[in-house]
Image 1 (cartoon, rainbow, N blue to C red):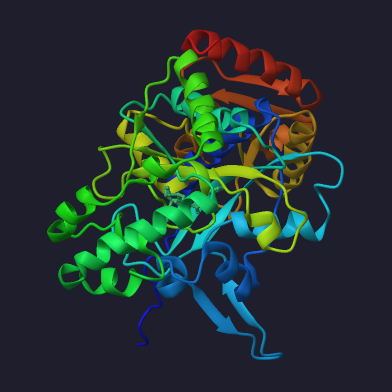
Image 2: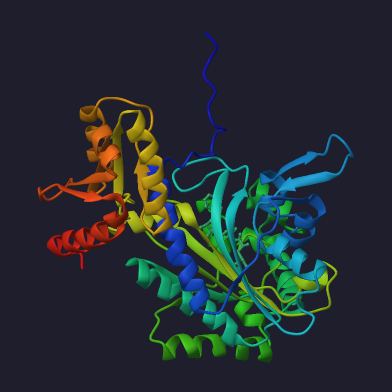
Length: 431
Ligand code: HAM
């Protein structure tokens, strides 16, 4: 016997019980995004590899070791499964001239791909909800992004999520800091680990982000970017903080927050929780004023963030969040040839008047069909036998509250069902 095929490691099936939770989450997220005036955009999952190299940076974990890149067998093009959405979103905005007349508030959601070592909260195919505000200059949009996250955590009833912020300054300020940092790290070169040595001249800022405990004292003593920020950058960062303080939103300035993608400048932020183990960052982002020009667009400022849906849902469930099971209004049971024909008519009539109906398919006795009806979670069964079909009637049988069964003409079924559904919801206390 051949071995059964399995999903690719780190790429998960989301089965119906869980997928229903995803759908409800997606609806909450969509309403939340619309309430802030963001509009959807959908980009391809595959992009030219140079897009990510240019946007994210050649010397980053993502580009160096995590991209699913391949050559198109037909034309030799170098392609990559998107590891994130910002680069694609900016590429699309440039390609379609979206910033022609006014700035844009955009969002996207969907799978991203990174060849990381899978563990709880870290997958090779994972999902993000991403938000990008293109063409906005001031600190107000940075603050809007942070406040909107806080509102979503509130809507989802999440606690234990903490905000960390930092400013990475301008590229000129970073260049001066970088020179000072290299000079400092050169003094400790012998003690640097392999990654550190490799990054010393290519991406020294990332060395500050190391998890290696042996390097912590070096990191602690390193020149801080904050000391190199100019007046404009300081003003911008203070502008963001003023809004957060006005809103009473607690935050911590983390000077070591540098992010793993190279396009950021000025404000960066992360939302972290201690309740998910090692993979505690549920949402992250910041300003990237240089990226649009870097990808060939007319220079324009921008900022955004993305959250990890798997992590957010894990935290939502940890915090007692529960999705309601989606059940049909009616499970339609039928036996007999005439009854089956009537069943299709009745099901379509009910759907046409706004009810959800699961029609029994696949035959079986009344008894076995009633078992399925019960398992479906529907509050009512509509039962059609040949005698009901011949009389143009149906039986409406309550499945939950033990109420009496009614026999009614088919054409009054929608009205009767509507009344009975309201009654049963009132009895339930659900309205
Ligand atoms: P990122 O920090 O690479 O930023 O990813 C954002 C979030 O995606 C993370 O905080 C985490 O919740 C989730 N995430 C990342 N990798 C994985 C993984 N392997 N498994 C599960 N979840 C993961 C970005 O991607 C930027 N594009 C965010 C942004 C948008 N900045 C500006 N605009």
